[in-house]
Structures are given as C-alpha cells and as structure tokens.
Image (cartoon, rainbow, N blue to C red; front, side, top):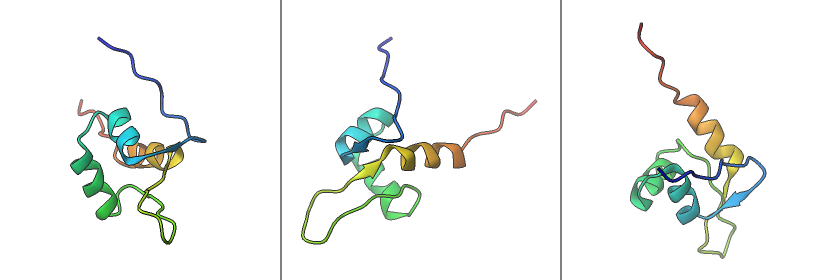
Length: 69
C-alpha cells in the first residue's frame, strides 16, 4: 500500500493536488466545491482555483462518520 503525505493546513493545493490527496476524482472535488462542502478561492481574473489545506481538514472533520456500536 502506498503511503500518502498528510494534508498540511498551511499549504495551498490546486484542485488536482487536493483530489489526489483525498483519493477522489477531479469531478467529485469540483462537486464538493460547488455544493459548498469544500471552501476554495478563485481570485478575480484567474482561472486557477486555490484550496487551503485547512479547508480540506475542516471538511473532513465536519463529515466524520461515527462508528456504530
């Protein structure tokens, strides 16, 4: 099994990097951004989208699945 680098809260990720770090497709990541589940920034006049590592961690913490015992 390949080990992934942990998501760092002070790093800025591209959509592609964020999707790879989460192990999801780019279209799924775009859907998470579009529905507001994942915060992203797109400065005026730029096509590029920026995602803070802290936003990824926040989304993961908000969607934690509780174990059923």
